[in-house]
Image 1: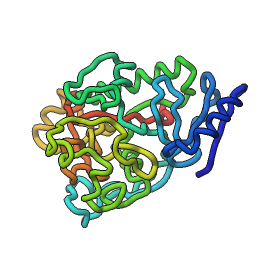
Image 2: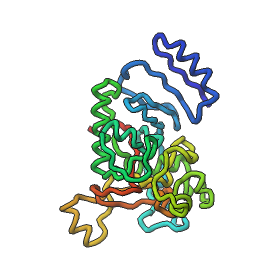
Image 3: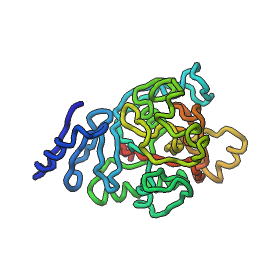
Image 4: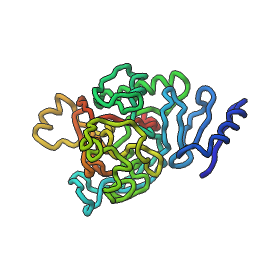
Length: 291
């Protein structure tokens, strides 16, 4: 692993501490920053690079640009019809939350506590709608810009469908980020077998399972995660309700409520953007603004 150390004016002591602490770090690239961010570029150098220089100390992982096949191959076990493979290019790298947004982070930005079960500062924020999650991202962007920590041209937002699956796969092309062996899923995910069947019907603390190759936790299971994209209009009911509720929004990753097939990298479903549930949360992306 390449070892990086950024020592900002007068930070020699911090540098020595970092060198001593290095053997105990997990999947870590530490970027020491003193004061507001300077300059317009905050791009990372390599997949898995870690940054935490924001108001919430929220951990973000660098996801490099690249190409992949989004969706699942026809022979993948228990796949769904909406997973047709598409050659996809991620033109720009971005940062993605290492964990799902926690209740402590949600309360710091929004101030409410909408969840009922699975309570705790490091449990996922659940019972949040797509609109709620978008408001969280917009509020975080505004606060970080005002503080000088976020340069112009960058914003916090929900990841797109393509960004989410690309990050989940972390270079893999199998059913799960770790391979095709469903029996190994419990090492990486909270899902039906180790939650509902264990009488623990709620989202669990983030970061307790193994991460994927790029250092992202809970990409399989725990909570379904809202994405920025619109979902498909499939039924006559969808057509009738769209003028009232707007287009449904995509959700990826599966949850504690889902079986193994619903936690695959290519699994996607959608719901109306005002809906809330105990198995529904989100993680934040830091991306170059399209404005």
